[in-house]
Length: 441
Image (cartoon, rainbow, N blue to C red; front, top):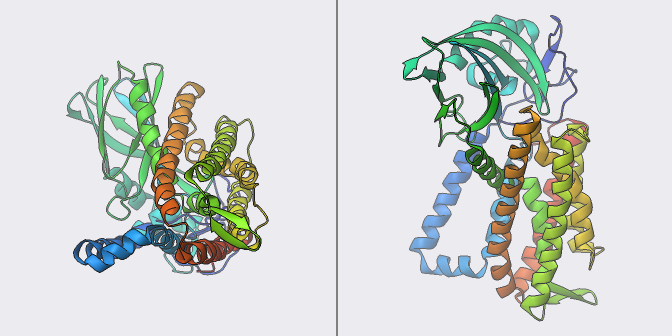
């Protein structure tokens, strides 16, 4: 499943002539489009990565080459996957809301139309557009497909799920099917076990974000291919478990957010070098390189933490299309700064200024969950801590190797200059697609 460009709002109910683009989900005119799923991309990139690992573990010469040029190899891997997923910033998510009321559990399941189209084919005439008529004709199929991939057990006894309504709503990344359903349980549940398997066979990176309300408490959870089954004691509320789970998601988000990664990498690449005249030279010691990295990372962290909080708490909101376009522009500027050198000594300022924009991008994950404030604050802190932990791991892996290779021509020319050119080109594609709402690749 893949996220399309930022979209214009669509009404919860749509007239017969209204349609949604398969990948962009916009309620505006457009041309035929094609769906490229992360599942397919993950498979091809994973095969290439496995082959590379096998080569370096069986071939001594290849292994030596990898050790010598690890930053460049890492950069190339990020660029390759970033190019392949240039369109896909927001991952595939669905939003499951459950409200326990006696033996009946009222549910609402928001599922992206682009994901459903890939799974069961909503675009019946194959013209790249999903009309309300096409969607309505598949309501039974949508309900059967989704509810067969969700199971609930109340105190060890199965609950029966049945659909009650179908609507369409708009999230930050496009139009979603809103499937309303009820789960009838034998008795009022005290312990609830949920098994979630939606789209895992098509996209192992898909996540199901749960909001569960029972006994006046709201708790959250995240289902993934590695954690499809979870159990909840409705009489007990574990804040620590939720904090750790959102922390894990924050780590995964920064590691899979290739625009965030390439922005940070663009600022880190010259940290182990110093400018002398018109050329880059190796930094004289680890201390200045470390403090340069510290300034950049601290500035980026402080800035995106500010706007992540403001956006998640809905103090400040910006259109998703503007945010995603500005993030792409920030990557272009950061990369070009290494080529034309207009940021020397001021990279921490660039990190702070554009970090404010990146924070709005981070907030999209939590914003669509629409949590109550008491649950939102916990998820916000956990998610932000996870983002910082993931960021520190990247820096800890990058800095020692980059410092060791800083004096090589390969690092100064191929990694810094060549890599920055490649990053700028990829980000320019992102910028064009996000700003102008069309697909180049």
